[in-house]
Image (cartoon, rainbow, N blue to C red; front, side):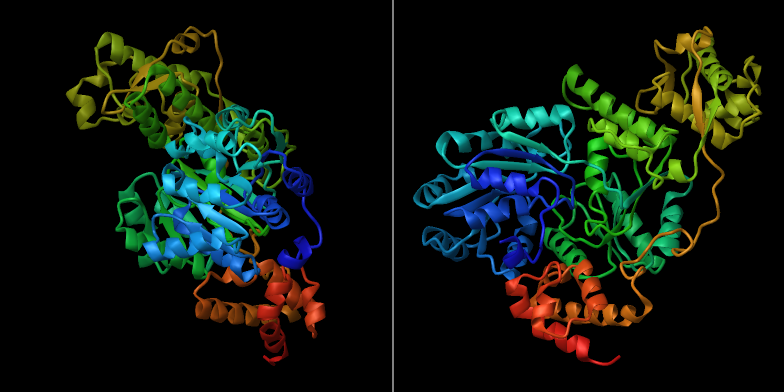
Length: 598
């Protein structure tokens, strides 16, 4: 099946053992990174076992593309969801009952409809695949209430094997998935979460839109990518800013008209080099292999969310960038959101723990990849492909700076009964004679002007790190800063504070000098025009068929064709990613394209 349908010669990692488990009728829980080949783990058993593989997926907007991709491989696939009319649903239902489907995709809410359950009872089910299984975790970043009822699958169809799959889970989330889906007795497979082709970089905010534009122009010109923002307003403004500066970008958020949202998503999947600016509502299940960068203009709420979002880059294994701009205001805003969030104290503590882990990743002077893997309970050596490895930051003793800052907060709080935000505290430390300083007579404080050894931006870094270390906290609607119980340890000289000093920013490098590579960068010179000719053929074919380009062939397959230059269908069929159906459907077109002179 792997060779004939999918065009690959060998399984990767645990794929073969997972497939054997499910084909043999056993249950499996699979934790595997994005791009690790999770889909094959249920697609091949669905083809090998008798009956139809039923895939539970929350990704309604992507089901058509998933079915198109399988159809291109010669797999009989269909879906049932709320986007279909009565006749479309009826056609799929009849194909299911007649045994004319290999895979059937269902949104989880369809299982609440009694007619769907009756339909499944009447057909023969090969397996249940629960995709995006982390959606069952109530305190996770993508919780879907409908996933809580999926434990009933085992109760109603006890003899049908189940496979639950996710690209992200801490040890706690892993346990929660197993318990909620009644998979504690299943065989568990946990692959390495390392994505070595992704370069992780976190930079201090300094006009983030301009920083983003600089990144795209110098390293990712013409590349497809995703930019994440926290608010809808920020999404709209950033998309407009990029477009005004010559980078084709579209917005995506829940407030857009559903047709516009669907159109923008379809364009992103089908066009080369488009940038989508989105809230976190976008991206889960996006199977676009050539996303070259994922950028965050706001601090993600958790490491799990950050990993899931950055994992959408480089699914094809080629070099890609995960870039995050992060500043003091992000920390203040996130702390404030947690304090005002709905839910009990335990819920707020959980949110705080997520944020603390994300801040630790941002402020670390160690290898970011090692810290990221450690969060998921895995070990990783220093990677030499993250910013802290490539440009190691200095660590400095910030104890005295911390004492000066905390002392300023203390004097305002206890001597004047006043609370202020970061800007006023820094003005006091720098001895600035502003109107606000005069208004509150802050020049009379003993701490006035005692911090001139650091610049404004450096003091902002000190405050950011004190917030990250919980030596300061945020209070009230105006983001005022107040002491914590731990502040006394530093003020009483019982605790030292090590801080991260950002390395001096080097001038922007071009793509070639920064070591980033386009999909064609390491091709032999003589193969480049062939590769581009194949891409043009693929784009035309995809447009004619109304499917994304990657449904025809991935870039990796085109690269190999451009190098091998096969002259027969047999030789072409030996290339990875070309199964029997694709060979029959596209083989002649590829050979004709290769035979066409430049």
